[in-house]
Length: 455
Image (cartoon, rainbow, N blue to C red; front, side):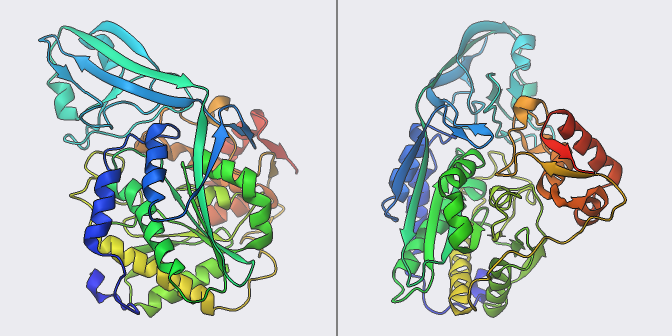
């Protein structure tokens, strides 16, 4: 499929070079914070002249607080027969990300309360997080779980949560104009191939390609940060600058599978980011699908939050939640296709060329589709800059597994479109969700002080 794309010239990087960087990044235990994240940025810094930003733990970033830094020394379980198992040293998905320290002896039944598996994927180890609720746990395949014998298990979780910092890196590639293009990606997942490493790899090699252009009209801003909290922290630092200068932006994620492209539009729906992406995909002859904006997904939901409403979309190739291996150990090197990943870099470069040849940056944002109907309640989001921290208010699951977040879709739609211009029927029309489901979400958010009723 990738060979069918029309590109202007042979790629400057080889598949072997991309794979070599992947292999160095793969074993690192990444999280929101910590040594694995910094080492990831160090390696990417060999391709991109990154400037490091460290946000100290406890720093207030809009409605969020920069978390404690997670330190992992070792974590494992010793079976009744003395065998060491579920060892984070063997697979860094084994430990629930951000697990608090624990040592003790547990029965098989007691241990089971701290285990996570996927019955629908019996051979996969799931990726599970608990960033904002103190707990510990281990992940294993369903086959492993059902084979655990009765008896006592010795558990060692040698971790710490310390005052440290959250790591963000940026690189600004100057053009002749102060108008900017944002390329944002995340560096917080452990050993996941398409869902984690394809994004920063594509962004890093894209930077190198754009740096080799003889001329650039736009200034290109590259951002590497942990998902959600990193984008929110970055918006706290650079949000006002981006509101003044951003012409278009993209979140680079899930670009490594040999399948069709998916372009997710910005909140505005017809921004320069959207028109350039479609034009470029058509120009290179790509097989692609268009997806309207939704306030779930990756960091586009932060950049497109109502307080900023930046023109940021996302071009993917193997989008999240659309392949069964997502957020499991099956999203590994065998699943990724380096030629397809290089084709994604080609596509992003084509998008940048389309931007360079496009007209001037739009002077103002178009209001999002949907208007107040006057038939139902209208709310205002009291925390419009990035999404609010919902977990501490009991509005969001505190343990992050892929199948546990769908019930918050209605809440995310209500938060994103509660800008005073959309009542609940207008939100229902745009989201496709039942009005009563949206009403329940809005009332729950109002009760927690996140929304204010306007009418």
